[in-house]
Length: 347
Length: 215
Image (tube, rainbow over the protein chains, first blue to last red):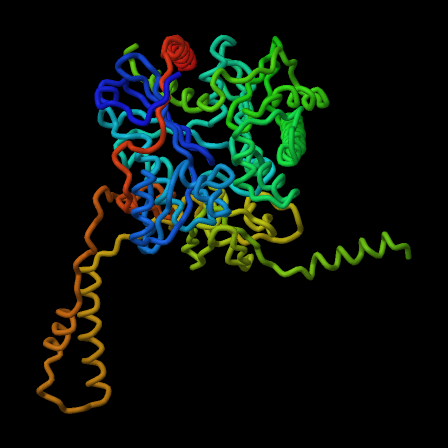
């Protein structure tokens, strides 16, 4: 795996037709296959931090090579991406997010234009007119009273305004496309994002049950921070540095690991409830695999805690294995990409 | 009388005293216009609508069906096909009639002619009624002068505007051309990770074959 900042012009121009984009609460990842048959994923943190629009600030940002967007009234500069998190930690404030709990934030008045700018840049130009772009969307939450209709329609209109033919795909189903090919696209795919957990139970690629739970990484950060009088941004940084849920080494990690376990138990209880109520759960002839993906599943021993908690409930199918996606961070973007390319005739 | 029975009687009476309204909550970020009863509801806003009005509103019915609004109380008023209580629902108007959520196209020329005609008739009848002798008043000239002040130019259409055939577009106010100023270079955001596409190709083949089977 190689990391770099830029993608060459040839990469962009001669790439395969079809592009995938995972529009998440914490990260936006786009995926393509370039002319050298490499998968290239562009990833951008979906966060911003506002500072006053003054000459001094602009020069400082320029020297730091930080990307920023000007507010509509010109009074503020929104530092975006990784630098936003750095600024938030320096100024001991919280970062702001254009997405909240998986959908466009109602708290941020400029969320729409912010998200549009980021998506446009991460996607780049289409390779041909109306190139197919599959973008991820969450399923309806079962534990919260809001829907995703507006979110999906706005994102579709944005992607189409950049010259693509946009098609929404459930983010957990995208994981099924990228991870369950060996099992005939049958299994339970789970995406543990920052804002939500999405689930898709599929039989031979057909979604039987899809739903989401409106708690995830952000909930863990906020609550573990509150418990020890810390800022959520600090907890995010501690978490992303890497923690072992079964062996926390300090106060921050202890708090995180407590709320991680509580969160996993909550999610699994909601699965049990939803699956016991759903009429359309297929009778699987054989045990099925459960795939764990998404940034929140990156914590060490996450799978062990998940196994411990899922053994406590009754599921309408037998479990063959519980495993991490090959690429937990990019499984959704890759699934969107594979699905988009498969729409074209050529290999 | 035992407490349980007292409560049951009280609840029964309270039911009949309860005001007849439908309480809705906005579920679309932005604003949903329920035009045929002249109401607007913002995201998460709670609005009480008289049950009679709610029953007659096809826009409300549509907004509810499409989940742009949720009904917190008084759902029975919108469930027009079943009668679960002894309340008599009002007869529904022609169910085939399309809800008026799409903006009507107004012919401004026709409107202008109507104004001219109405102005002429009104001035003439006023003169006749007051029996004033004003031979110099040219009614046609006045009416035409008023008509000349009416601008019938339609607002300039935005590129991509066409006939609105999907009511969802009416409510979502997203200016597709608008972008914020930034210092970001083209495709200059984020980091790029490169991975081999060997496995990807075989996965894409399998998805393709799955899709063709599903067709």
